[in-house]
Length: 93
Image (tube, rainbow, N blue to C red):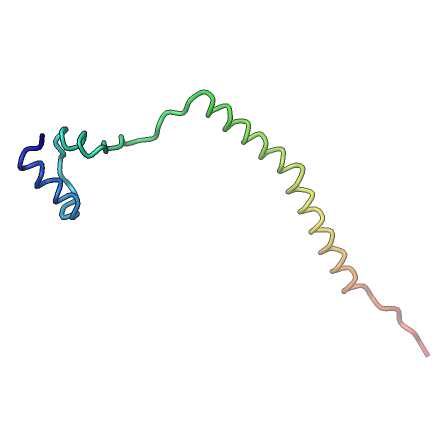
């Protein structure tokens, strides 16, 4: 059962007429939405373990994928620069 001020409040909420207002508890329960708490949700032990496993996997990928890729690119650049800057053979007549 709504009071008249709660009905007016619900109408104002739907029209988005104001931003800051402390909602009566009956309105929050009736609308089915409660305010979210500020701050991060506490991480469970399982989530922490999964996050650590993902971090370890990323560290492994750095050694197996990223560093060899950089090495190949570096070697290609070195070979290109060497081939473009090497002295040509001089022929004397």
